Image (cartoon, rainbow, N blue to C red; front, top):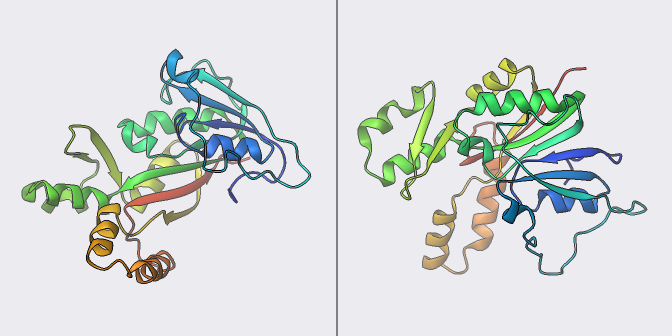
Length: 231
């Protein structure tokens, strides 16, 4: 992960025990604390990659990984300024609907100059979900909604953001947005549909994805962003 600090650091990972961020950070030499929602989850053996290993940074020993039970919105037991970095990937801030409260805790536990990497669902994804469920009246209001909460077909709810909304909530909790970019532009269902109709279309899909990511227009279904706590 190119976002990680260049020197061994203390990282808090809120992305969940099955996400790979924590293990990549440990392999790069960082000490990582990751949150689990239950004792059983905290002690569950993590999923392994195909090779069974993460790539280690040259000349740097692996860091340590500790799992604790906690909630991303309730970090009251964590000392203020305790971490050099906080990773909130895996859409965790869209699943916690009170995103402002979660970001305020992230800002509090970051040291001055510390950074956070986060991933949220975009309004593009929210509008696609509404269209798939024939929620046409709601869809017409979606682009201008101050807060857009969208139900998934399984009954869960996601909070979706524009770049401007994400920048605003980060600023409100005292963080400075460094950059924001689409994680992926094409949805999984789009890729599956295209490949089902043409198994040789993979190169065209990759080319479309790369060109769209480099565009000035935001068209992705998930936003990946980096923000910093001022010194």
